[in-house]
Image (cartoon, rainbow, N blue to C red; front, side, top):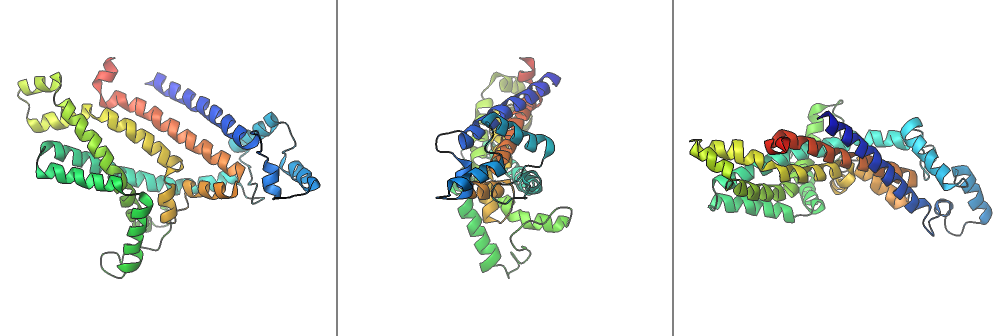
Length: 323
């Protein structure tokens, strides 16, 4: 276990280094990529470009610019925006992180519970109406873009039926910090949680159902039946547990990506100013320091999620520990 954790940390550092160099070169060193020209504006005079380069440190060699940016991100934390001078990037990201984490953790709990429950019921009632209905609901959710479903939910809860008993409890769009009001925090995020979970759970349910059915054909299940174990225990204690490997793999990828900013569409639709929202604003204005910092933040969580998945394999599947 210790070796796995050390290896995971090494992978995080290596990938962060590689991604940071690659992103920096794309925005600062590729032909035609002149940050000073973007900052100064179209048709800026040469003396204006020279002043901008001097002011932002863009007249220094590339490796010096890179090292200075990494120092400001990881050591001093005083990296400032190119668009809004004096606006510190790292504190802005740290302020946005709780919003994204709140959205993704809540929706992940929902979609895991929904997908595992749906898959187990579908297998237990295989080839019946229950199986077909559950898989059809999952397919409907899988087919819905999150921005469309979110917009529909906003239309229903914020406009058409807001004054009815169904949605009169729904607060205005936005984020209420957990420390300020736990109840307001949960109320404001409940519909975004459900929206994101409904879009994701169908795929997970279908994958897990197929893996459980395959596991029920394995030799260890036949042995369990020969020992006289009940079908429910075989399904829940043996087939389900050993079928979670693919489920956990996909979950790790999706969860890491969502925490890293892929929840952008949900954040924009529900006016949640998380990391994805911040990244979207930076891309529109080509604010390079913000883009660099958010990309590194995203990379960290994607690699961390994959490392935790590898460790989780050891817990859920005894065959991995034996190999």
